[in-house]
Image 1 (cartoon, rainbow, N blue to C red):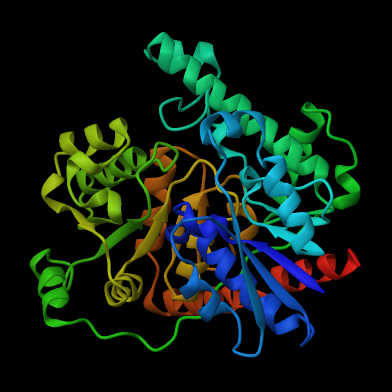
Image 2: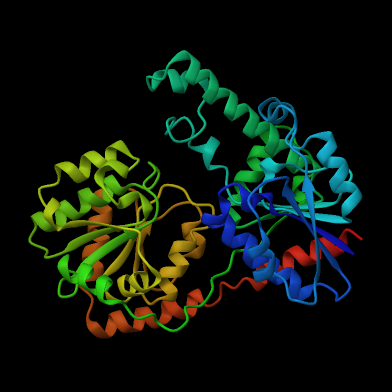
Amino acid sequence: MRIGIDLRAMQLGHQFRGIGEVVRQCCRQLDQRSAADDVVVAFVDQGGPPVTDVVEACFGPDRTVRTVELPHPKNPRMAKLRHSLTPERAAIIAASCDALVQFDFSLGVPVDVPTVVVVYDQVPVLLGDRYPHNYRPHYRSARNAGMSVAKSVNKAMGRQVYERHLAEALDRAFHIVAISEHTADTTRVFAEEHQVAGIPEKLSVAHLGHTPPGATPELNAMERSRLDALGLVDAPFVFFMGGSDERRRVDLLVAAFNDLRAHGTELKLVLAGYDFVTMEMVLSEEAREALLSSSYRHDIHLLGFASDAERHWLYDHAEAFAFPTEHEGFGLPVVESLAMGCTVVAFDNTSIREVSGPNCELVSGTWPALAAGIERVLARTPAAKAAAAEAGRAWAATFTWDTIGESLHRHITATG
């Protein structure tokens, strides 16, 4: 069998995001489960960034992997508006493989190839009107947010293209794998609104996995000095790690932190991730304003990029990992935190309800509730904290990549 995998997702920036990890782990799973004589056909953009490292890391030396380059259309922008997948590219895919796995619906699903599509969420349209600057709003919402006519039209057109491509992918897919029950629910609603038939019969749920933490890496001298200089070695702290887009309500986390400090709680707040190098790099205006105006700004530390050793150290030493997000397709950071024995305080919404377990404090989406949740965590006895950490690790261990790997392989082989 010739199993096609669209690795163009790894040439578009996804290799640095969550989708990139899903692609890598699922490729490894498919390699383990496929017959010895099955051939993997990797589709890539002609002249795009190389994916050799992905292929070498994900497929064994005995696996035959053929790379097929897809030519660029003459006018890429116009081609994207017309088709998620140009007829020429679709024909090449159809001639090259017997089944296809598509990790990014926007890259297209061919009509003549049984395709298994992985769907994560519909955040760009679900939150488009709420956060028009970050996502894909309707025209009126963009204008109400102060955008120019030209930018509003562009935003609205982007939304239409997104919806058309997703509807097309769902309609053409042989099978759809949603990464959570929540994502499955929003996919069903989207399909009904866009009159895509047959979804209940070809939609299933397979949770993502978590790679168990290995040996704890040692901090180097510079990393230890940085953490020590921030006063984190000897002081209690909570931390957030991730992006600073508006749905990640860092502004509410800062408000909760301010309240705790105002009531006498000794605590520091650490913000880690590429967006937290400087104040200017924080994407959300609300978050930036909250940080700048905090009376306790001297105890709020922007750590920026955290190495593997620093990440482990934060999980090991923090009182809690705070995850005040309004919408998640799966919520892998929650599982990662629990696997490291770190308590999670998060908003009780979307897929967070599915992945949270022992050692989690789920609260309503307000800063007073967030502050109260953190306060409850701080009040635990050492014995209660240790027991919760152990239970959380056991819960996190149930999320393995075997689940989605087995699902993908089962549906691929069913195409034959």
